[in-house]
Length: 118
Image 1: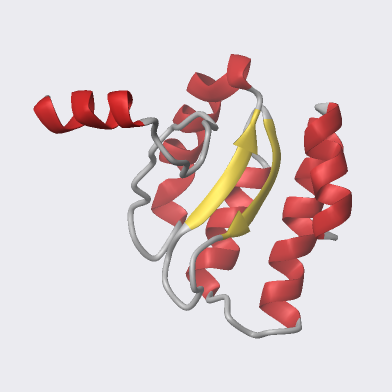
Image 2: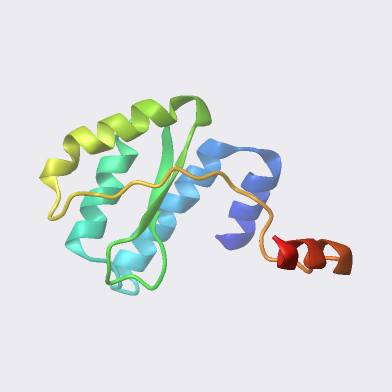
């Protein structure tokens, strides 16, 4: 699944990647039993919101953190929908829109010095 998801990501196939997100959540819920009712509810709610390609729990599980892959043109509608329906959840969701970026990496010495001086 990880290799297939990486191909979807490389190809910009968001619908396929979203299905991998969903499959991952199902596996974490059913095969590893690390999800919770709240996580299952929020991922279902997010999947039904405008622009959502897929959603899954993230982190160590057992808590309340989930991630959704959302069409950037529909983020506002997605957030509005999740907030409006959030009263169905055990706790009010806290939503943090983000964009993918370069992960951890080594900084060249000159960039590192600028960071230290800031």
